Image 1 (cartoon, rainbow, N blue to C red):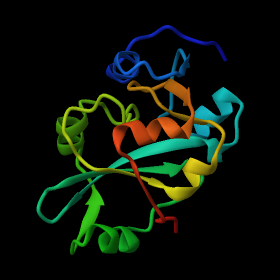
Image 2 (image 1 turned 180 degrees about the vertical axis):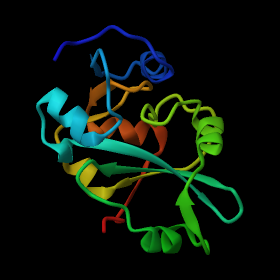
Image 3 (image 1 turned 60 degrees about the vertical axis):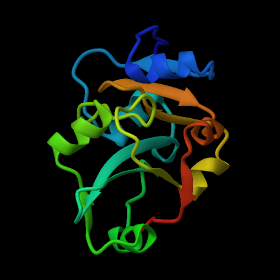
Length: 158
C-alpha cells in the first residue's frame, strides 16, 4: 500500500475546504468492491465505506454511505425518505448527479446538491476509508469530515 498524490474532484474539494485526508492508490487492475479495497488497504471491510446513489419514483437523487460489509435495507430507506419507491440509480443518473464513474463515487466534490446519508455507526469509528473519486483511489479520513458536507446519520442496515 502506498500513499498517493493523485488529484480528483474529491481531493480538490477537500483541499479547498482545508480538510485533512490521506490518499491511497491501487495501481493495475482494480475491482470496484469494498472487499478488494479492504484487502489492498489491509483493513477490515467494515472500515471501507461504500457510496451508493439511489433514486426515487420522482427521479430525485440520494447518496447513502454504508460499511463495506453491510447491506442497505431499501424498505427502511423508503420510510426515511418518505417515498414509495427507492432503487439504485442508473449509471446515467448517478454520473449526472456526482460526476463520478461507478466504482469511483465519492461524497466529496459531487456535481449536484443531493442529500447524503450515512449509516450512523460510521460516525463512531476513529477513521474510515472512502472512495476518492476514481476506482482504486481511497481516502483515509475522520468520519467527522462528513459533517462538513451535511451528511445525516441514519440507521438503514439490513
